[in-house]
Every structure is written in structure tokens, then in C-alpha cells.
Length: 440
Image (cartoon, rainbow, N blue to C red; front, side, top):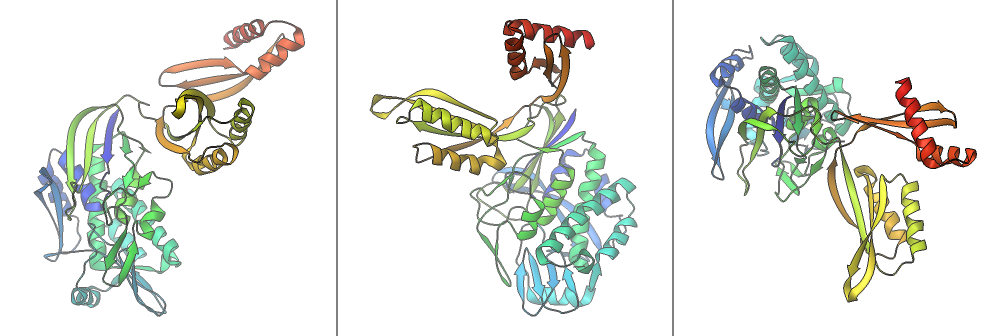
């Protein structure tokens, strides 16, 4: 299966994603010609080769009327002024006006912003939709681009508490964002990956200083878009993932995991504008991997060491965890300090339930600390049906995936029927499998 894997160890922005995909495309000049013929007035798209921490990669430069635009989202609301999510938020009782932050950079000149504010005006979501629909690209690209814009507008609507219809975009800043989004959509169409897998995304940490205040990282709109996606802060101070980058990833990603087993045919580096102690880039791998060769889900493994609890108390705790929907609970014999024989209590659960399970382990055991490790898990899909046998109805679990099929009668049903008919467990078990094979 033709697979695109995006490694986002330094976050993602629209221009970084476009640059990484462009390196994978064998005809870069043809792509640039397409982008410069979109029909957007004053837009010029250029590429250059830059060095980050000794690694050569592609950087994308978008100029609007000869000026490299640092698109930030400008909003008008209420009676005070602050900057939020890379947005310069000014006050007004009538309208909310936005333009998107670009390329990890929040530094703007007040005079420059003021000039563009008056010279270019603002545009509604409706006008942006009309602009995209008139571009000389395929209907598929237009559809993808509009879906990405809707994700961003929805996030801003939620964060600022205004309807999407009231969001207005600064035209010049928005043109830059439109180019990034359209460029990624065009390249996705040209590269034709069958699946797009994305690593957990590093969003950065701390705060970012803007011309009107200090914001948390990730910015509120970015955090909203990335809900349900595996993210982490990392050690870099600053904003690494922008709303545009987050929306593009959410829209195109088939799944999120560590790199799958794949035969890589090309590797590309899409460089960001800023320099950090680590190479500021999105790394893209294009190649082939077998269908269903990636982990299906992420799970947490919680564990603690116990050397002063009775078997009854440990068994009680294990049942508490299982009743709370742990995936599995087990103990491992270990040797602790002072030569004490002990047990390691291990609980497997979904990432979403990890905190809840950890608290239960702390409450019902003598430990004062619970360790957590996160893992990717390969899982077969299971379906349960009921079969009528000479010993009664017995449920059968059929699990499939990765070219495998596993069939197993449910233990509780087999046990019940064996006791009821005074026969061995194996007799009922084998009879159930035989009837299942005949009916199939």
C-alpha cells in the first residue's frame, strides 16, 4: 500500500508540510508554476534549499505583492485589546475579523499591520469560499481546501465564542494561508498516497510572546483542532504547531502512530522559518507497507511493585481494575530491595482511562507510586455470534485481521454447559468448534 508517513517531532505548519511534500514530488518547477497560476492576485510562491542543524531541506516562501507575509489572525470583539492564538484581537461591537498566523512567527510590526489592515480590508468566510471555488485547481483540491478552512474557522468560532458566519479574515494574511492549504491539497493529489500516517505531534511548550500579550502553547485554536490526536509538549520552548498545520493534519491523516514497517522510497525535509536546537522540520517518508501493518490503537501500561500485600488483597485490587474496564490485569513475580520476594501489578488500559486506573491502583494497594508507559497495539477485530449445540447455546468469538482468523468459544458458556450436562470441558469445546465449521 502506497504510504505517506509524516514525522512531526517539531510540530507542523502549513508551509512546512507543503515544503516536505514538494521534496517528494519529482517535478517541483511544475508545481510552482501551478501555484503561481492559481489566480490569486499578487501571490508568488518560491522554494529554496536551507540548512537546519546540518540537514538540507526545502523551505517555501510565499510573497503577497512582493512582501513575505506573516499571516496572523486579527479579530475584533468587545472593548479590550489582546492577542490570542497568534491573533491580534482588537475591539469592535459589530464584527470579528481574523487572519491566520503562519510559520511559527508571532512578531509583527504595528505600522505594517496597520498599513495592511487599511489597504487590503477584510474578507468573510463566504468570500474565501468563493475565492477557493474560482481557483484553477481540481474540484477535489477545492473540496479538501474548504474542509480544512472549515476546521480552522470552527476552532476559532469555538475559542472566541462567535458564530462562524461572524468570522472575518484579513485578506492579505488569508491569502498566505490559502496558498499553504491549496499547496498541500494539490501535492496530496499529485502524490496519491493510499494512506497517510502521522506521528504523535510535538506542539512545543511554555508561552509565546506576541505584540499584545503572552499566550499558552499550544494556542487555544490549535489545541481545539488537535483534540483526540496524540500530542506532547517536548523540550522546545515555543509554538511548534500552528492552527493551519493542525487542521491539515487532522483532515488528511488516516491514523496516528509511530512509524510503521515500510519500504521507504523517498525521504523529504520541510523546513520551518525559525531555528531551534533541533532541526525545525517536518520529515516525510513515501513508500510501501502491507495493508494493516500499523498498530490499531494506543494503550497505557500501568505498573507498581508490591512486597507487603496479601494475595487476597492483590486479587481484590485486580478485580476492581477489571470491573473498571481495564483491558487486562496481571502480576509478575519480582525481587525487591532487602531480598524481598514481591509482585509487580500490571494494568493495561486505554490512554483515556489511564489516570482513572492509576488512582484505583494507588487507592487499593500499598504502593505510593504508579508507573505509566504508552504502547502501540496491534488488535484483531472481533465479532461474537451464538451457535446452537447439543449442549445448549454457546457464544463464539471470531477475530480477524492481518490475514488471520481466530475462532474461540466463550469460556463461561462452555463451562456452564459442561457442568449442566456432566461432561468434560473439552467435549463441549470441540463440539462447538465442529458445529461452527459445518455451518460456515
